[in-house]
Length: 301
Image 1 (cartoon, one colour):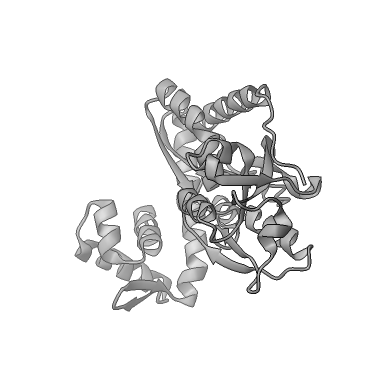
Image 2 (cartoon, rainbow, N blue to C red):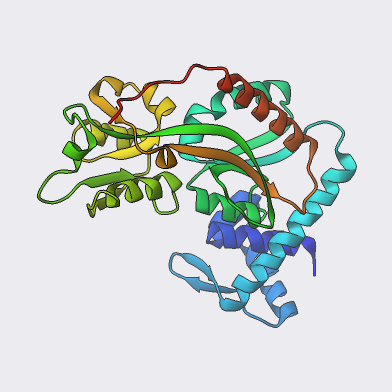
C-alpha cells in the first residue's frame, strides 16, 4: 500500500470529487482514478461511489478514511519531527467565527511576521465541528468554547469572553424583546455553536419557545438584529467594535450564562511541532495582553 495512494484517496474524499482533488493535487483526473482503482483492488473493497455531482464514501470507504487520515498524518508528523529546527511547513488552526474576529488578528499578524516560512491556514466554524476536525487530524489545533472534556484532546483555557444578549435599540429590556404573538427569533450560527445553545437556554428559561434562524456571518447576524428581525448572543467585546454598535442594545444575563472560556485544543498523541509551539506562545502573549484591558459594561437587567 503506497503512502501516495492514501494521500490521493484522502484528498478525493475531502474534496468530494475527482476533478476537485486533481486540481488540488495538480495532476490529471485519469491518474487520480487509476490510483484509487488500484487501491480498491488491493483492499478488495469499493471505497468510493460515483454520482453526478462527484463521489461519496461507501461504508468501507468511511471506515478506511479514518485509517488513511491517521497514517498520512503520522507520516507528516514523523517527517516534521526529524526536520523541526525552526518553524516551517503547514500549520492548520481552527477558530470560532467570533474568536477569529476579535482575538486572532493580532496573533496572526505577529506570528506571520515572525515566522514567514510557516504555511498557516485558519478555518472558522462552530465548536463541535472544529473539535471533530482536530480529532480527525484535519487541524493541528483549534480555539473553541470550553470545556471540551475529551480524553483524546489536551485543552487549555486562553481567553474568557463575556457574553451578552443583543437586541435592536428599541428594546429597553430582554423581556420586551421576547414579547410578540409569534415568539422571538434567534439569529445564530449553525448547529454546534456553543453561544447558540446558551441563548436557547436563556430564552427557554423565561418560558418562551423561540424560532431559530441560521446565519453564516457575524455581520449578517448583527445587521438583522439592528433591523429588529430577532436577537442574538455574542461576546461583548465583539459587539463593542462593530460599526452597528449605536443601533444595538446589550443585555446582561445570569453569570452562569454570561461567561464562557475559549480553550485551545490539540490531540494528546501527536508531536508538537515548532510551528505549533510558537503559535501557542503568540496566543498566550495575546491572552496576557487582553487580560490587562478594562472590562466593558453592558446594560444590566
